[in-house]
Length: 356
Image (cartoon, rainbow, N blue to C red):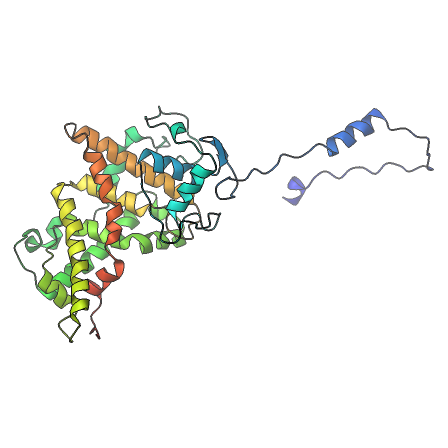
């Protein structure tokens, strides 16, 4: 192997007495000009400094920033910065603030109008495109019979598994039943992720990072899908707020979190989301490039785009009389993060007294 990759060793010419009058031969001049020929320069992404894969939307960018910009423009996404709107955007921090990343994309000259909003015709497979087991490229038109059916097949939680009482909105479940139901939904989210296409092929560290970031959003989607009853009194009891005296401000704040949870669930239920749509929404949530430390951000972004494409194709075919349905479904996803993961833990998974 070393011999195969090592450069050829130049033969040493027989040395004669030095001759100061010797002129360079054409061969020597050619060799010298070749050695002085400049090597191709490494072009960096103008946004994050990573290795550029070419010119995209007017500037040289990496695959990750290209996909991020395209997704942001096509979906007309609006981001917020949690800091001072001046976050560092480099290879290691580009996924930490979407607001500042998009701001830098525009600042360096990436053009919104260059993003084609129409669907591109199928082309030959390229880097970042994935194939099904039969070797066919995974284009949008193949999702209806393939990708969505695999997502549905991975669902371990049909509503029948949660019992009939879960589907009765006026039925007030006890504390133990609520916590048991929550545990099933959390376990089912992980079990579902392990069985959907492409996720098991990711590195273990990437799988952990994605689930760690998105488990609470998946939990809210599952709660809406099974019509989980969210009555305030048993939820407060499940959280242990009855165990010790608490200040009125603390109780009000906690009840506000419960209200936010209830609102997210009710808004999803109001859309009458079907099982296929829920599966696609969960895949879009799971395959997020916002997770820190991903080994292949472009890969994950591509999987998210494919999941979104599957949802769009499905909605267009199944709900042709609802042209705004696809947009309404996507608009529900950003607000899922308003439900704090710590609140979900306190409500359903922490059995301890709260002091003050």
